[in-house]
Length: 297
Image 1 (cartoon, rainbow, N blue to C red):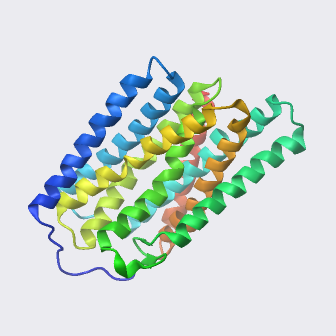
Image 2: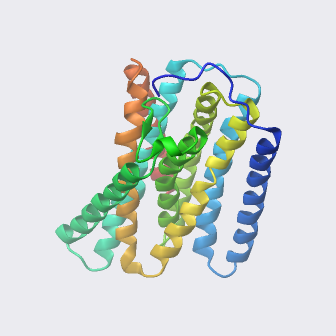
């Protein structure tokens, strides 16, 4: 965002306790749901577990904020670039390529399979664009966007922005577990979890810099990761209804992730003049995710 408030925003102690309790209750609820789904719908349970792994990684990333609030802008931009690289490789190797293969297995030719995944990709990007235009939210660097931002507290603008960022990741994890190759879903979940560690750190630091108390920034950063298991559930359940939906679901998730990469992560990592660091981080993230996907698949 353009400017940060110089004073600390101090939410009441009860508010902080509510956020902490919300994180605990949500985690317990998702764990109970996983135990219920395991014998009944294994692929949905696996998707939920993958989403929980990503959420745990996000929570892990917030831990350093409890002890220190210093992180150079170069390091932050490198982390943003690293996350973009992981997501780019995931789009290519975990979503687009398997999507085309799934469409081919359904009997479509090369043009038909590519057309289905391409159309789904554009639909996914359009869905995220629509959400970006309609939902008020606040970027960490660019500032406020969307409709009626004046009516919402600044905290909720951050929450909506985080949700917009994490929903495609959750959907991608869920969709990747549908089909005959759950190992590919594990590779994708692992890659996203790796990039979620620095993401959780950056989110909490941004909230801290915006004026919120350390405990509040950490709790909200942890809670932001819970969007991913919920997205994984939706992706696995919807695409699991029919095999014909698999290439559409994979393409949709890829399009949503590509939109976030191009519209959110890369611009934010290049706004402070650290393009080289961000690009190096992107290359490292891409190679790491490529290796995870090709080695584990």
